[in-house]
Length: 123
Image 1 (cartoon, one colour):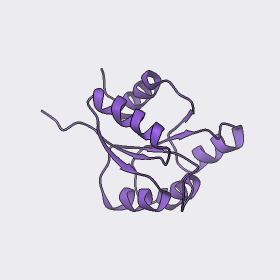
Image 2: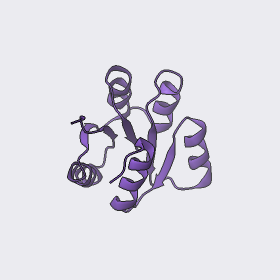
Image 3: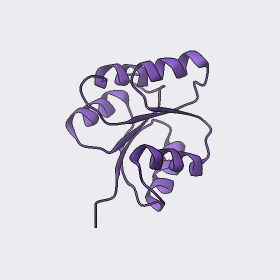
């Protein structure tokens, strides 16, 4: 049996983190966590993940800065989860290399469907 997909969550809101970890693990995903931009960037560059969930408003280094730093260095799909829902933030995320943008608040079922689509998995 193949290993479950490994998702890195880069998010500083503990409530959001707990919901994500619970929901993703219930669906069979393995999760890792970084609660600041610098830690998230280091983990993306030095570890292997199948997908990254990235908040934009992070301590130390913003999600935009993380996207910029990894854009040409790794090919992991990055899905932005953010309360910054205005069009400029969405466009900047895609220009930075994000494969999807999910506004907060979000439905866990929709996020799981988007992740599965990105990973080409079926439920």
